Image (cartoon, rainbow, N blue to C red; front, side, top):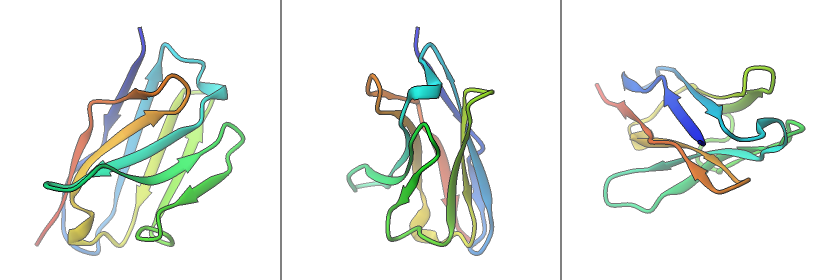
Length: 113
């Protein structure tokens, strides 16, 4: 059974930081291209960042220079370090595996003063 479990979301003030984690099981994580997506209320789900099995990354323009995606293949885990958070970053953040097209349940990130 495939499980992608996100954690680390919460409420943070503008300019603050959060680190999201995604724990994977039931997939061959080491060969999986992984990504973070987000969906704000009333908007379509969008790609935030993607990382290949070898560690190559790409980012949405809106988060470049502020967010960093990483992975630890020894722990079947992926991370998203989010710095300089803005109110427009408020959304539910989802972990996604391109291999098998699996989604996590999402974690809420709210940026507000």
